[in-house]
Amino acid sequence: MPVAFLTGATGFVGRHVATVLLQNGWEVRALCRTRSPRCLEAPGLEWFTGDIRNPGRVVEAMSGAQAVFHVAADYRLWAKDPREIYESNVTGTINVMQAALTAGVERVVYTSSVGALGLHHDGTPADEHTPVCLEDMVGHYKRSKFLAEREAEKFLQEGLPVVFVHPSTPVGPGDHKPTPTGKIIVDFLNRKMPAYLETGLNIVDVRDVAEGHRLALEKGKVGEKYILGNRNLTLAQIFSMLEKISGVKAPTVKLPYTPILWLARFFQLASFITRREPMIPYEGVRMAAKRMFFDSSRAVRELGLPQTPVETALSDAVDWFTQNGYVKKG
Image (cartoon, rainbow, N blue to C red):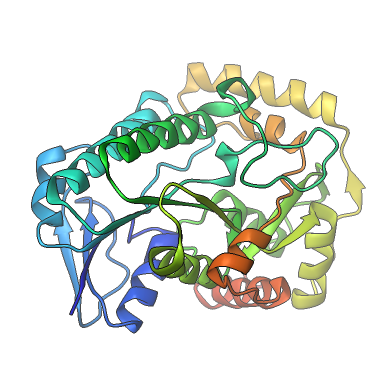
């Protein structure tokens, strides 16, 4: 039975990647930090306590693996110490790639993000080849993912067979933290969104993203990028879908961008004093200025990426959040 080494298995996407691999006959060695909840137990899954910032532990846990899936990432729009984001996303990626090179694994699937890709100024869908530079990155998370991808690309020159996947905005069951996108859904269901700041996202079922990782391993071309996405929607369209699914009334008040940006800036400055997460994340507001629309046709065409209707993904997310106590009764 082939062995895969997986980082980020306690996260939203990583947990689904582990499930897909187990269902397809792989043994999975999953790296897990001491305080992270092990939200999946199954035959063929072995947990290793460790951190991608510890290169020695990564080498030890990866020993004997034929494939590596580096899914782990510090996905936050605000941090007391932004250096933590770079340590996990950039230094951690270097450690995983170096260990994979040393171990001589057959293939590495590296999970980047559409946040590290370029965007078109007119809002038309971008693809894997849209021009981009570091100055285009908004916030520490995007900058760290951009820099991490550049570090991973360097290992191609040393002969490491890396395939790059770029999930768009995954939704679905199991978003236990939840992610920033999942929090939008939870706040909507709890009627905490009387108004909204318009933006655009590419929504995809998290289970399709997980399957896309497996397909990238089997069919992806070394050194190439694949956007794992599905449907481009404005936030208003997403809320309309959620209203139909849940019965909760969608907000109709659209907030003006510039005043909210200044308000978010105020909260950000206040957070430096209080050391608490701001009520309105400044980087999140800046991101909303551009529609994150992407073209995932290459992954569909070359990998066979599934395209589950986003209505199904949103409905399953609503059910999961409701059944697991994220939605207040009444």
